[in-house]
Amino acid sequence: MLRLGLLTGAAVVGAPLLAGCGDDAEPAGGPSGGGGASVPSLKIGAPHAVTDSEAGNPLATSIGATLIVMRHVYDSLMVLDNGEYKYQLAESVEPNADATEWTIKLRSGVTFHDGRPLRAADVVHSLRALGTKPSNRASVYALVDLPKITAVDDLTVRVPLLAPRGDFKEAVLVVFSPIFPEGLTDFTKPIGSGPYTLAERSGTTTRLVANEQYWGGRPTVDELHVVGILDAGARLSALKAGQVDYAIGISATGARTEAANSELVVHRGGPANANALSFAMNQKLKPFDDPRVRQAVRLAADRQALVDNALLGYGTTADDVVGMKLPGYADLPPRARDLDQARRLFAEAGVTALTLRTGEIVPGMLNASRLLAQQLKEAGVELTLEELSPDAYYADLMTLATHPFQAFYYSNRPAAVHLSAVTHAKAPFNVTGTSEAYQGKLAAAQATPDDKAREAAFRALQEEFYAEGGDLLWGFQEQLDAGRKGIEGVRMVQSVQLFDRVTGPA
Image: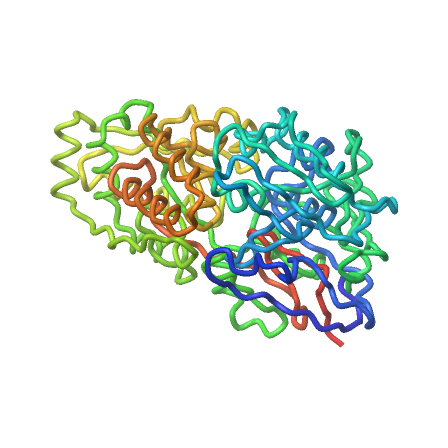
């Protein structure tokens, strides 16, 4: 439980593309401030309990509680902080003339939990490990020439690529670049440079202890207890019962119900920390290999009704492209519902029935799926729902691309990050099966060294996705959390809550 203690924390606001990447940029996650009274303990109700294989292992990190643990134990080279690209362990990241090689200068004065100083050799080891299976994020490093990464000196790393990547910072380092010491392969005893160390796991709870020597300043909370609670309603109930101090990911229904509760505060994440909610159609699998079917599904959907029903005012409609209100968003026109056109296209394609794989993977998704079934019925198509529990839904990431039609969600990210990390051929979350022609255009956009020209190329890709892609992206769902009254200073980095600067009620 959160007990007495106060220290001021500060949130970071969004900024334009690549702002905050200058030599004097403040790294996300540090400095923490330090110097005041501390909060002894904070209990956090988080989705998806940390498993033994994932605890403290950045190579196995997936979602929910595992990401929260990872972000507190490890620092990254770069992060996306409220829509702003920021350096963390890196001090600068610069390309050669054709963006086939990048030089990373590291921050000095950083130490790991065991007292060892951060060195270039640690970054070489980490990037090679992250880019090699069984790492869950190996695809992020597909174009990095892993064997040839070299330490130029103690604080300089040279990273050669297999092909030009003008977007190396935002599409590789920002996406996933936690750093751990050279030689570390046994993650049952994780060692990072982050504000917390992993002390123990007991049942569904992972206990983190403040790193007294953290380079960014001592955390304000002595201990974090990350408690895995699968169901959003159960997390909110645990908060109301005093079993946790902060509940991550409550439903819109829960937020509305508790709006008048003076003992709790609902925290809204805004566009930079929203989920982009989709019914994803795989273009490589029947019947969605027919563009008429994809278009018909998009035209049959009443997006405003889906948002009103599932999000209850805590979100906004979407128009099939990720990145709303973030750098590089193409700001495409609203997609209007057209039932007559949808019926005609379904009839031409001979489609009268579909099956949707779905589950409460985020609060409200099941309600939205049931409403979509009603909307498709108006267009002459019977939709069968194949409902799975959230833990079963992501049990095997490698099979996600084998389902023709499934409920899905993405973290809202700038176009350069989302398109590169999610829509390329080898990405585990490429559930829409983008074409070879699209892959060629994506590679060309990624290779463009000039920032403005690259942004224009990504805008064209968004326009193509809007016209022909496989996402019925119908809503942006704000991250909704709830905490006990007086808890302040919770920050979000890449939609992951950070608690190292939290202050409590007096």
